[in-house]
Image (tube, rainbow, N blue to C red; front, side, top):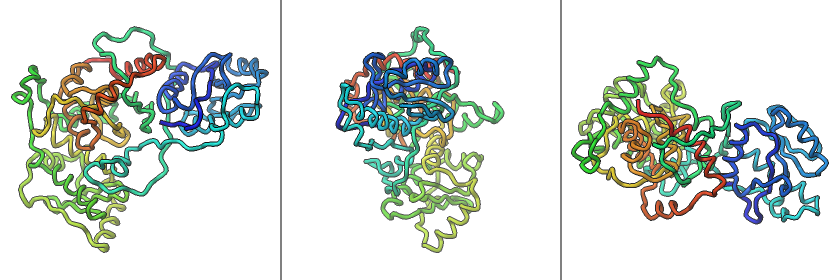
Length: 449
């Protein structure tokens, strides 16, 4: 969460603002920016926010310019007006945070303003937004025991919805349960555009559906959850390549070096924790790679090797020359998990256990499948088991099982029941509840296919 530690949030009023930008701001104010801004009436506000690209906004601002209140102006193009702070679109958390500091500095020079802003003006520190790369770096406990990577500047949170999107004020679909806000995607460097984007492959539908069957299988739903272990197709992770990959990831931490995974037929994969990247000589979308992942491997068929400096230089040169084989390490583990499970569940898990997402997967990097955003959205908002999530979304269980397996492998789930109960007690603010309902409704609506 972004915050200043010594003062309360700025009191702001929203003037002429398009519905989609209003939703973006409210979402930010209710989440990562709730300690920076508080929406109040215009008479109570110390700062005014206006969308300069919205019809009538410029006239409305000019009418209120005499008030002397600083204005935060949203616009695609640069705007230079007295007592105004321009924020370029699309909006980012960094820009909004900087605007809060600038507005504070303006208010310091106005003694008549009845609020304490000196501390806000003097501090620039915010809590960092976790990125997907941090899943293989600074998180504690670290997934798979991978060593920390050098700190990098994190991307600003990009908030963007489709232009001219109107608020949907129709009642929520009865089949969608009321959810409580447990975590905020705005705190996880997640693009609002990405959250709302459905899976729309650029490849022919028949090719996409074939790939989804490779990732999620074709198993029928379990109709008796109480006897799930008799109906659910199970797999033993220790028999598959996935376990070798996880062993390699643990070795990267112990040795603090890259690890080569020797595969059958002369192929190999190289895990480079310093770059948070993986290189594989096999195309992860090829039939050969799919068969390697979803068939048990024989003892000695896959081996691990720590390359010497000379070997590593040669391997990295090969990787640089074959960029198509390079990918994010998280994405590499994700696709191996999916191809291994194919909609099945590991024998080692308790499918009835309540879990909730600790961290959002980086959907811009991970291979997707139907309903993935809706599954992530609901599991991000409330604890539940796989059966409950599938039932609430009215989607085939195999997609939820596939997500569960891959997310568990990436250590994305909170499984500590004490922590889950503690988070369930944290009720959302009343003013933000309607917003989250509208945002989630875009993802949670719809039925199975």
